[in-house]
Length: 77
Image (tube, rainbow, N blue to C red):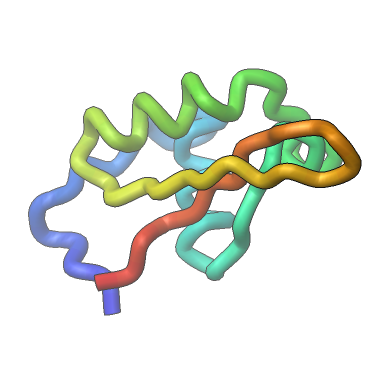
């Protein structure tokens, strides 16, 4: 269960809020999946905003077919 007491919610109708809802549902997103599902092109910047608001956003680098990309998710405590 996530402890929501110390986090600040992003403003309604923002990309950060939309991503937070997706992460809260357990979704893991890459830039490609964020573009396809939510129209968000600047995933790393939006995740940075969420981190600054206190959300425990995690990331890892995935290497596939000679290419590297990041995956982001909300760390559940």
